[in-house]
Amino acid sequence: MNAPDSLAPGLKNGLNPFLQADFYKTGHPFQYPEGTNKILANFTPRSARLAPVLPELFDDKIVWFGLQGFIKEILIGLFDREFFAKSADAAVRQYQRRVDNALGKGAVTVDHLRALHELGYLPLEIRSVPEGARVDIRVPPVTFINTRPEFAWLVTYIETLFSCESWKPSTVATIAFEYRKLLTYFARLTGSPMEFVNWQGHDFSMRGMSGLYDARKCGAGHLLSFTGTDTIPAIDYLEDIYGADSDRELIGGSVPATEHSVMCLGSKEGEIETIRRLVTQVYPSGIVSVVSDTWDFWQVVTDFAAALKSEIMGRGPDAYGNAKVVFRPDSGDPVKILTGYFCTDVPGVQDHAAMAQALADGFEAVRDTATGTYWLLGEGARAVETLRSQEVKGAVQCLWDTFGGAETERGYKLLDPHVGLIYGDSITLTRARDILVRLARKGFASGNVVLGIGSYTYQYLTRDTFGWALKATYAEVNGEPQELVKDPVTDSGVKRSAKGLLRVDETPAGYVLHDQQTPEQAAGGALAPVFRDGCLLAEQSLAQIRERLQASWVCPEPGSVRWPGL
Image 1: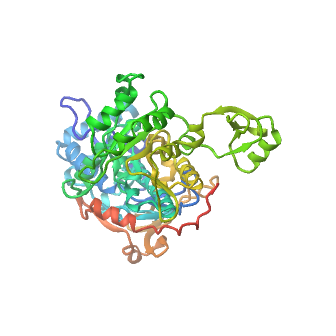
Image 2 (image 1 turned 180 degrees about the vertical axis):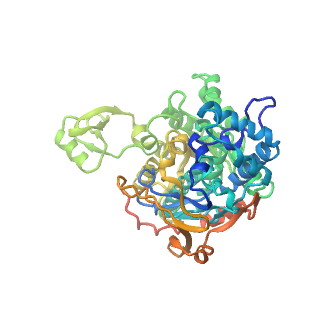
Image 3 (image 1 turned 90 degrees about the vertical axis):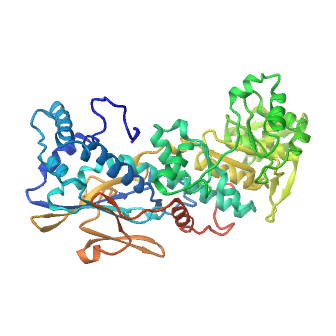
């Protein structure tokens, strides 16, 4: 919900919670059979077929996150403030006006809302697995049931509101953890420091998200897996909703960084002096990130970096021991900018047979031994265009040539700690994988780069990314149980729902759903009550959620995963 908690006074409508719904929901309380006294519904990720994940590491599990926020902000905060705290006439009149004007006068009556207002709380029970748990596809992490027979309709009425508030935080938390899995594996493979992984995925997404509330909740989902972020409100959200305390724990952090306006104001001719001033006067110690593609990125990471080497190497550490200048490319192909090309020599640019063999051997460019010119290869082993030697090397190799570094215990090159790279333009999991694979092929450790994960990852998502849906599976009419199931003959099977009362068990292999349960069976399992009759029953902290998430996955042994191109 991209709306503030409190709206400006004098607004005509505000946020009546019963109007935060699809219009068709307003008629459902009257469409259920007379005597319907109980409904059970669940929220389930039904499919990962559209998910932008890596098949090498994805294990058909999603990260469950965001329920506590929904309960605190919506079920308690919004409903209390905008419905129960108002007079019955005011709360109901607003609802009546909206449905009368849209659906026709009298099409929807309001006695059920007056009865709920008189009750004074939401008669719902919500059961959930712990947040931070990774739940298997087609297993519901949360269920809803009414606690008073006259309000069974409420369970499915809140579907739209719950779905639009809840699918995305879990989806983003899942994608963030897939990044962490990838970075963890390559850190182990190449011997990069494991503690660096916490900072290697950095949230750049806020400006591309669909509103402040979207940014803060999704930014919080990122922070379950990483500590690097530029989304300030995500830290506030985790303090307000998940018991975090930045005075006592690291929720998220960042570094001083420039933008293009800073570099432009220093002028193209004065770019090297701008960088010199930044790294010696403005930030003489610690980490500073310098956007470097305002004009000629390759000149910055070669000529300028070499000219400033003594100043960069002479910078002092901050309180955390850091003294690093981070160069930030921000355009072009991130894979090629960071890793360069795989190149070999040919006798001459007209030697098509040699170029064809080079292409067959997996080379992307060739160097003409007669002229020393680098050529990009195209289909049919054509020499497509000339390349600068810096482009062929890639940014990591360029910095290595100037600053050097050390070999890890796994035999991969790691840049001197005074320099590094961060790339945050259009990064995806696939591109991140390709970057790390290509660096490893060239003998470089994964810890040479930080990846800025932006809205190109966190906004290019929908409810269908993991097929989230809230469906009723059980009801009682005049006390008689009915098992409900949706199973469209025109569907592939993805939309088939569970049936009857549900139980979810945690096993060593993951969470398992059992449907068509007895009431006694459904009372047990991993779904524990977290909300009942207007009250939050169990609260979880960021620290607990992070610990649970980190413990949910064991990194495969280095070399055990087959990566394309490695």
